Amino acid sequence: MTNDLTIRHDLSTYQAFADTASASAIAGDLLTFAKGRWRSGEEKAPVPPEARFVVNMDEMWTGWVRWFNRKPVEHRINRVSDGIPAPSRSDLGHTDPEVWETDMQGNPRDPWAPTFRIIMRGEISGDLFTFSSSSHGGKDALAKLAGAYAKGAPKHPRQFPVVTLGTETYDHDVYGEVAKPSFKIVGWASWGGEVGSAAPMLDDDVPFAPEWRA
Image 1 (cartoon, rainbow, N blue to C red):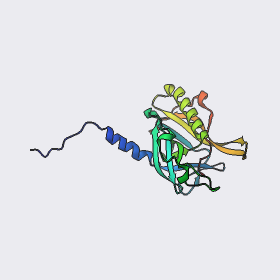
Image 2: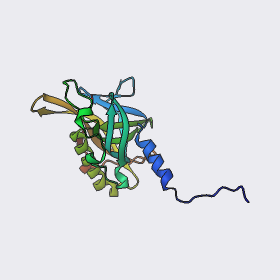
Image 3: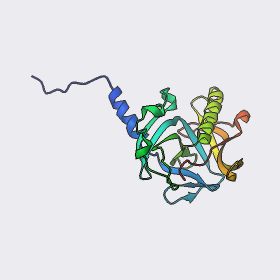
Image 4: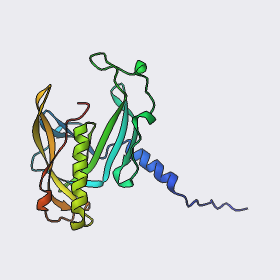
């Protein structure tokens, strides 16, 4: 008889737990955009327009978040880099509008909201931030950013886009002129801090729509 513990070589279950745990959390401070202004952290500190962030494209997430009592209670999201598609709404359950919470107008509100998330760090400070969106605009913006990254990454191996944060506006059929956030790619850098040169073809604005839940 031996006291040695059996070592299991299948580590997939551990990775699955790690992914699930990280998927339910926000890395660093939450980066928000509301009423044309960028703010960060619980204290809602203003973000200066000259601030630069390295966007970790390996930490782009898509999927769903379930809300209850105005708080997120369940996450079903995956990394884009893992190549695992997000589940469809029909696979998530909670499909009976009779038991849904209601919005301010008394209408049933689907507890599951689509979510799209990206993690970044301050280029100088190294502080972590998470920007997330549950809007079609956010999804489209991340898709554009992903396309720009796929196009530019071969010229910048082992580096990610460096961006500044801005504001744009668009005309809404109901609400009139609406402010939306934007990302402007100004260079490339490694996640550890090595800086690369800017690519002219990627020096464009990537708009994000306001948060689904303000």
